[in-house]
Every structure is written in C-alpha cells, then in structure tokens.
Amino acid sequence: MTQVAVLREQHENAMAYDLILRGGRVIDPSQDLDEEAAIAFSNGKVAAIAPELEAGPTTEIRDVAGRIVCPGLIDLHTHVYWGGTSLGIDAEEFCRTSGVTTAIDTGSAGPGNFAGFRKHVIEPSQVRILAFLHVSFAGIFGFDWNVHVGESEDVRMMAPAEAVEVAEANRDLIVGIKVRVGRHASGSLGITPLEFARQVADETGLPLMAHIDEPPPSYEEVLERLGPGDILTHCFRPFPNSPATVQGTVKPAVRDARQRGVLFDIGHGMGSFSFKTARAMLANGFEPDTISSDVHKLCINGPAFDQVTTMSKMLCLGMTLNDVIKASTQNAANALKRLELGTFKPGAPGDATILSVDDGTFDYLDVTGEHLTGDRRITSQGVVLAGKWWHPA
Image (cartoon, rainbow, N blue to C red; front, side):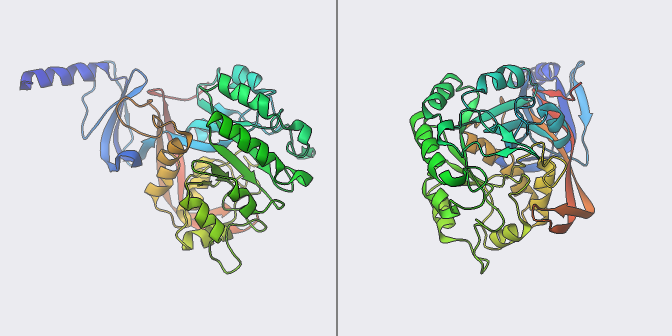
C-alpha cells in the first residue's frame, strides 16, 4: 500500500469514528496494554487504539487525561431482577454509578420466572445483563429484611428438568447454573440442592456457580462437587466456612480445587466477605479469579455498595491495580466464556469504563463490622456503552 493509500484509509477511518477517548491511561489486561493512548469506537464496536487518532467532523471527543480507561467492567455477581424479586436493584442506575457495563445476575430467577426477567428487565435494558439460572423453580424469592426463606430448603422447589429446558431455550442470555447451599439457603437439605444443580450443569454443558454460607455443608464438601470452569462465589467468607485455616494458611482442599480449574469469585454481598480472610488468602499468594459485588437491595447501601468499592478494597489489601482490573474484565469474561467481552481488541463490543484512583484516607467496611483504613479509592468517572458515552435518562 502506498503512502497516499495509507493516508486515505486513515482519513476514511477517522470519518467513521463515533467517539474518541483521548489522553487516558489505557489498561487492557487482555492485551497486556498499559499506556497512554487514544481509543476510538465506531458502529458500537472498538475501532482502534493508538497514541493519536484523527477525528472526523462528526466524531465526539472526550478528554479523559488523568483517568484510567479500561474495558467495560463486568460484575460477575449481581441481583438485578428489579420488581420481580425482593432483592433486585435497578441495573441501569447501578451500572452508571459503578462503571459496570455487563451485570451478571446470579440466580435471582429460576425456570419458573425467567421469562418475566427476560421480557421485563433484560430486553429493555441498555446495560448488558446475562444470567446464571437458579435450579430452584422460583429463584431467590424470599430474601428480604423481614422475610427470609431459603429457596433451596425444600426439595419440592428443585426443578432440574425445567432448568435444562429454560437454559437451552435462552442460550443467548443464560451463561451458567446457580445454586445456593448452606444453613441459611438450603437448611436441613444441606448439600442436596447442589447435586441437582450439578446434573443440570452437566446436562447443559454450562458452568455451575455455587453460593456457600454457614455449614452444613462445609467449604470442602462444596468444592468436592465443583470441576473445571465452575465458580465458587463468596470465596473469602468469614468463619465459619472460611477458606483459611485458624493458622492463617489456605485449606488444602481450596488449593486442590484451584489446581483442577475451579474459579474463586469474591461475591461480597451482605455476609460473605471478610478482611481477615482476605488478608490470610492474599498473604499466601491466593488471589481471587474474579472480583464481584453481589450487590442487591440489602447491601447496596453497605457494606458492599458497588463494584468499584469492592475493587477498592482488594486494591487496599494488596492486589495490584492491573490485577484488580483484570479480575473485573478479562478474567470475568473468561469465566463466562464470552471472550468478546472484557477487552479492547478491535471489533469487540464498544464498552469502556473510565476510572479514577484517588489517594487519601478512606474507610472501608466488611461484613463482620471490621473497618479498614485504605489509602486509595477507585471511582467511576464515566461509561461508554455500545460505542457511545452513556448516561441513562
């Protein structure tokens, strides 16, 4: 190609750019990229990354100097079936303020009410919503301040055949199978609901995400039933059912599970993240694969708040900024088997999150009531969704 042809092609590309973000520090772990650059979006996709990009006459330009630009954040554990479940929050409002462009709802809906979730929440949403389908027929139906009924407590609620049918019919949106086990979620049934979910995951070939709360079952019993690509959420739980021993080491079953490909997700929530556990795990070199908020109505005003607050906690506990971003972009996309997400590779969906990392003194709270004084805070400064600067009405 001659120099004239190259210049002509660059000019034509510039004419087609819808949006250029300039001057930011672009961090894209999927491409080992961490440098100041401009990034352009066109037709809802990532178009180009370069030190400088020429704008066309209709290109919107945003100066993001002093900010971090990363692929749109993926919150791997949320509850956004607003209006359909008592714990659901509004996805668009949450995502705008927390920099999330893909919210993964984990089990709010089961096969008995997924159709409503799809029609009334997912399809109208500007924010991308994907889902883990609960093996319990009605999903998480009784989770509120005054009413708390574990959806896995009654074997009559287990609906494996219906879950397979709904998962197969909604492959575009359903990315896995969800089950909640533990004293609060499954009561006297213990591990039994996980056995049902295991069969559904195997039948559909989808990953299984297991919630764990207080025993029974034990952390080890849950891990025994998880395989490569499955996800244990609430992985840095406090005692009881902590992954750390009383001596501050990592339990052997936890290391064995990671060795065979089980993924470990934070899933902060209202009762599932402890600074004490996190410090012990990180001190032993055991970082989470993914960082997620488990945001819902009962924890959105604390202690979880949102995705960037959860990321801030992990940053202040010692993870590097790049690893924190990786756990909320590339790693999450890999866990979902949606490799087109969490990246700025040309042609990827045009989602981006603009972040700031502020120095100072910041108070963080875990689910046990422990406070952590951190020296940094990650906040969202803007969102690009489908190639356009986005704010909901």
